[in-house]
Image (tube, rainbow, N blue to C red; front, side, top):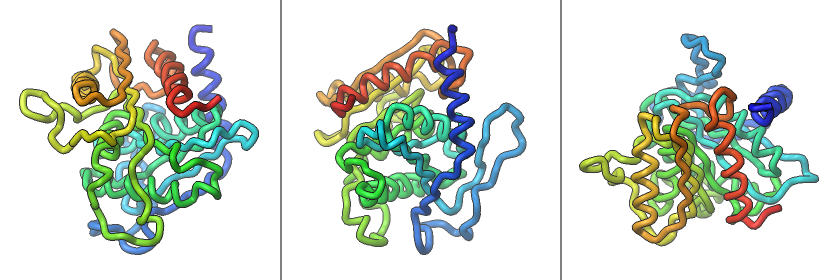
Length: 283
């Protein structure tokens, strides 16, 4: 019974993943700043560890996961998988997370942002994704004011950037969707990385905090090599009198997603669900 919750989730994810999902490409014309032609994501076949990874994305997109209309709570989450800005752990930190969110009534959108080593392109992609989701809110039966981001590891970094740089114009408008705000309504950072790259391990200078930064949920373990990122981010938000909820477990390492075997993946989803329902006032 110890990991029954996670095992059931994974079985649900496998059955749901077999169903065809809509893919919405973010850039109808040329991808800003991209030098390569648009191609399907390149699958990483080098590592044999039961994780589907992409090692190159040149045509950014969102994969649309919608909940059963009977339990739809009107909120949406854009999911940013991790991978060091070099790869995307697409199932473990993407589609499996989307399946979990769907079970809770949330619409989910798995972001295929540009890699490898294209941090500015990734920021453009998440900003554009937020605008596209809000622009299609009626179609997907969600509230644009209840649309947030969620990221793991480097995806946590990207989610933090999206939550602090929403006033930064990173690309020229493409269509009417770009007249909308790209500010997320909330952010969830799960074992985030690269948030402590300031002097003496302080907040990464790029992350400028303002009164409009949305509420954040941060989960970390003390033995994670990137653990200081969570502490620094939470401390900076607290000092700025912004809404933050931080949870730290003593052990768990890094990169577990929802997969069983450690206490962390059994713990963070329960706490995150409560936090989401509290801030969004959903049932």
